[in-house]
Image (tube, rainbow, N blue to C red):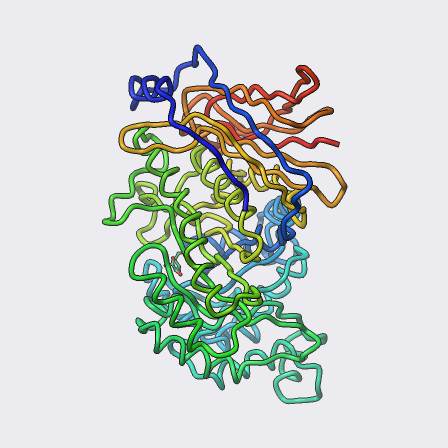
Length: 518
Ligand code: AHR
């Protein structure tokens, strides 16, 4: 919804071309940028679920990442890592999607209930062929969401189980009756029904969820969603599995779902910022060409969301069906030496920019986008947290989520940005991206992202008063946190100054800042 004005500047072009693939050096001349916030044109609220997470049975995403078990030497609350729970509470995780992902379409919920010692051991064929002992199942997940204060988003196995199996799972979780499945749940230690707020009808039905055509997937959704219900007062939202931006005709798939998917409440979309053809590149130790390529790939989300929304508008002009981008984020080569199939990657300042640019895009599309789930919460892809045994660190992406907390449930305000381009090789993008919103506390929040790894910016605004907040930056494009230096990249205090009655910000290169303006 925001208008962004940006123009290529010859100076930006010369500067970036001459510094390609070098470690960033201080910029002699900051570029001149202006940001204008229109406080009189509020948009639809930024649903807190836009700050959602995804946790799949993949690598160390669940085991060691969330769950260590009650007997572990690692400090835990009833089996959940204390450090992880505390850190996730700070970013006010609103929703967690589970158990997959691809894992979900071979998951039998009955494997994950009852005494842990008696649960069957299966092979996780999608992710490394390792054994899955099912010690983290329905009770462990649902109790985890309650411990966090987050909503549960349960993804059903549509690919390889029947609607009846899923209906029974829902009854097990949500029934308050004196009935066989509810009694089994009670015997397994949970008296009260849980609330399943969101229900995924499959995952990636065009791929690992069943290799279906759009038309067939739509029919499956219509049929399946008829049979999977929860008590009406729960207000559960059923989510049809949608298209991907990573290949195939996403508009045709979206159209097929909207046309033949039955009575939809929400439709999902997946997009990972990774190049087609598999040459993903490393998570750290990259040059400027890979910095720029990744940010360019990230920015494509704006087109995908606009295009998918436009198709949805044809069938749903009143925007009653929400769009959930329930998998997104950076996807690089996995860390050398890590287990094949575990998708473990470091997380650097580049990922902080990926997160901030993506969240700003979602803020601009709150008319349709009501939930997103970054992939994935811990130890997998663009994670918030990395762990190794008792070791723990918060990634630069985590810190963006931390700084952006005031945007949850805030009212977005259009921010026009007049900025030179940051250009490198064949890629060109606005040097500065911004998002503004009125927080639930009445303050105006402004986020500023400098995509240029070399050149700082002087950002003049139409805003007045004082502005204080935090900034995330580092000495290199791939600055990151390690278990030896877990706080190398962490937010520092930041403020604007008043010049001729207007707020002005000195924005360093490769930085994300968020300020509050009372
Ligand atoms: O997040 C990793 C995988 O990416 C998920 O399992 C799948 O849905 C997607 O292709």
